[in-house]
Image (cartoon, rainbow, N blue to C red; front, side, top):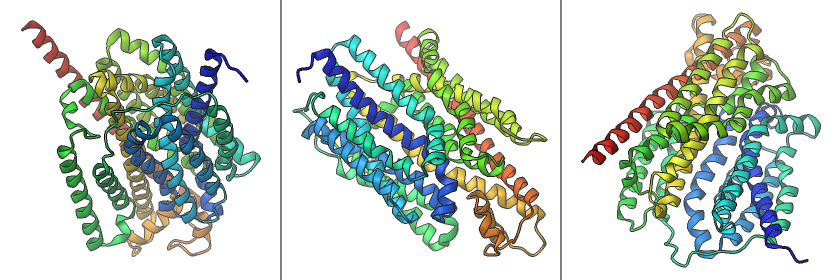
Length: 510
């Protein structure tokens, strides 16, 4: 069947958009399943964290390698392989009958998803040669990606209600087959004859350093001092080895000289701030809505729309504001808005009768902040470096996001557990050790009330009011952390952008 060039490009864009849709759905639809996974697969709090962290860590790892592999062996070929792998690993996750198998499946799924995402960006740039067509294609791809992220919670909640948690993963198998069928005859193959060799040393050392940091944060309390010190030392050594390896590379995947550009550094702080606050809290907000407020999965998904939909609606406004006022004004403003949203959520959580109405203002404000910030951040990281380094800049952008996300999923979990444990300590009988209370806090954070009630935990049959107070205290600490971090990073970003403007003005005057 003959296809006109315009028709062929439209179908190729559809295939790439389906890849972006699947990638986005796997980030925001999975968190609503976590309470069900605890119930059905008997996962503890740390295992629930790793369901998310395995995916993000794997994405970070493969981002650094996929670009070079795709340039050398063919971008379409690597995209097709990654789509096949994403469908197969999604099926593995859906068929998992234990937390260990699910976490392993999520690790493999993250490798495939990260490769699929990076290849689709490279393919879009080559498939659409005309600047106007390329702009429209990227805009469409961005909207579909935003739909996956924004509607993920309600899609996940609906799937759980209608078919079961397994289909949050299994649904990607037919989507992957459809993507392959469309892509096979429409996407144009492309290579880079001057592609550099793979930076194996950099990939391995940075991946091990990030994994060690996340493992230390999530498991440190149970490891003991000697093991914790050993892992911390190994993590520092891996990061030092990464810095050494990158300085010796002719074409490093991380060229640290770009951080001398204050605009680039200010934008990277924006990447970090969004993933210190907004995105990791996406993992815990469904737990608060379901366990703390008692909502079912569908009601939780509807509530989460207030948190995620502004991220889809407000990027055009953020872009217009950036064109008018400059990213140096918009990015810090957006980050500060996220911080204020978290403070508003904190106030809503301690209302006399907390519920979705008291949480709504904060969720909306935080969502508006992320919507305003995201597009200017992405555009600034690539626009503030020469075109020949745009690929590396986008790689640093994505790596900063995913590494920060993985670390802060773990950190927010620590704050949640410690906050709950501290609240329990204030009400518990004398003589109960804090370590014992922490065991109960982990059970509460994971929604494991059955364990508490059957006497398998240290504190049996905790009064509902005490559990509620513990949850409010724990989530309050998480919200304060997210808000404070976003506000501090907004201020630092503003300082960097302002100093860059002063340097530019000085150079022009000379």
